[in-house]
Length: 322
Image (cartoon, rainbow, N blue to C red; front, side, top):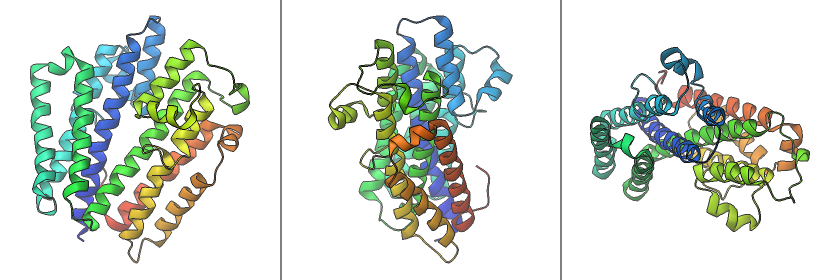
């Protein structure tokens, strides 16, 4: 398959997933901000959200003080912020438009309709009147795009690059979310700090349940563990369980499988590195990860995922910076 076509499909999926992840994080922060808390605590939450995407310098340069209203505008409607929902869905639509011939009619129409309706929401200010409903709409459109892809695309190389883009983006965002949210509770988090058998205080419950809800894992946690929410188990669920759709292990499994399906004469080392990363997740134990430091582990994971993305671009795609 032409590298130009593969590139557009890969990034179409990454941008669609990035928009959904941004909507998820914004929605959780918005709902958490409605709870009784000090102004400084609320500001820390919005600062943490910017930190996840490494956007604090870009934000402060343009907006100065961190406030809910300004952060929402920056992350939803700011065209100059490449991680804003507006910028991501525009980029997804442009990549889809460039390769309409490689997509089914349903996939193209879903991407195009999402972009058209988004512009309407942004023009009439509907998203500001009810941000929560708007974020649910963004999530729904991403689900629809993914479902139409699964249900109508031939499972050929084009499909594989789309799935690979989704999985890499999702793994990256889950790792960033975990790193920032755990760091907010304890910058030097270790498994021995807390007794996992002890019920967490009320404030902890809201914090950990918010993390779970941001990746649609609250009900899954209850089904798997059937007990109180503890940070150790949240980390285990979102890192090591390959039956959890947004976990690091689940998404690396998808990356490895799709890499294997599109392998070429140049991709051997990329496949090896992806397989090694998956093996570390598949055979790792959460006690070992927490004992050596969650922040260090997730930082290394992000470095390895970013390296994989670069290698995939070099092996298969166009040498273009996105």
